[in-house]
Image (cartoon, rainbow over all chains, first blue to last red; front, side, top):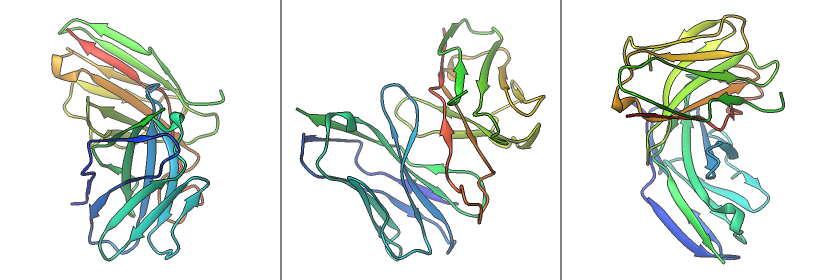
Length: 113
Length: 120
């Protein structure tokens, strides 16, 4: 069965610093998708970034980028120039040919002023 | 509406009572998902609708849980004889197409703000 592991329950950095959130997953599939979602206190899950496994190039979205290491089954999220509004829970999620998303337990990120 | 709407935002009930949670997806989204999120955990899949039919209800924990989507838009999650262990945030999400490989919107789930259920 597929699993997603986020080993950092909580992280805290100063505003404007760069922070990296880690995620590892386990699958025997070769074609799949990986996602990072943000959940602020409002509870609404918001898609931050998406990576297709068949693409070698790491996805980027403005200040957000990923380091996708397929062989190591690692999918970390880097947030550059962190802002107070980045404070939230961050969830890593996996999807293969099925339609279900498999979620990690989340990392609580706190950006300090 | 502009986004996925869930009501009520918060619901407090007593053990043994019946509860309904409503989800109004983005207009035109054919796929609808219910998830349950316990404190400190990621979402847990409950049920997936494609149109009016439940394509997969394998995540429903037991027969006290039931969900409907009679007209292919609004969905209601129904919980009978609530138990304290049912306390959680119930998230609804919709997507333009199902999350199957090859669709251009793969992975683009749009979530509501959830309904927090507290069973006393």
